Length: 393
Image (spheres, rainbow, N blue to C red):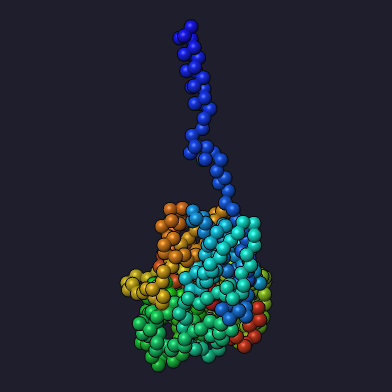
């Protein structure tokens, strides 16, 4: 009988032990893994707070380095869902290497934090230069946004040390002058521009200044002319355009978001403008095209490569603490952004890759518009396109 009582007590004790939970196990079971969030709203503005900036990237990260991302609409407005806590809100255009702003924000659960316009102004990080032209003044548009650019000359372009000081160079239509009197000078310029872009510098050329890209004197009259640095197989442009308005369609989603429209009329107010007659679609992205003919009117590439080009630090590259990475968002949408270097290993561990999402690893951008950019000229809706070009180089 005693043995039976002892057995009974032993079974009872076992059953009590089985009902008792391990404290750590219980904590894991009851943890709520959902992330508490709030909203951050604001209006992205140019540096002088006079122009709203559409199509800007706004993002932050939680403590596990998950990205929270949105874009500004054509009026610059945005609403970002962000994790609760103290976080850095990033505002960028392009891949963030040339224009970006960082804001410290305390996000509270289920509350909306409204950022002031003095916080959401898009800052210039890039060192910008321009070559004065005969027909264009992109520098005027740069200045209307509150940004600064330094005037340089063709003699400066022939000095690689000078060129390498800048992140972006704007080539105004008509600046490639006096070619015939000094072809050696332009040969050096072409080599320097190739080095500049191959090492991450970005270039914008307008109308006749396509000659810097593909050769020719003040403009291009045929394919495969002497000079330039973009391979002849990639682009041909001839000055055969006619005076008058051209119906155009915006062919890029990011540009459409920034503008708030996807059709416009571009007034070609000067005769013999450069008409793109042939381009490599694998090399160039068409941003704006003629509606009726589908001819390219505005193109860009970051696929430039060149053999034998020296490795040269460009612009802010030697001192920057930011790195460009490619992150894939839900829906398999890829974005190129610049983040503090300290974040890179953690983002890579989550699947990000170092460098832009597309293009050659070290190439900067080349933008080319067949239309003009004079701020006081008859550019109409194209003005918004040119602002986009400036901020996305």
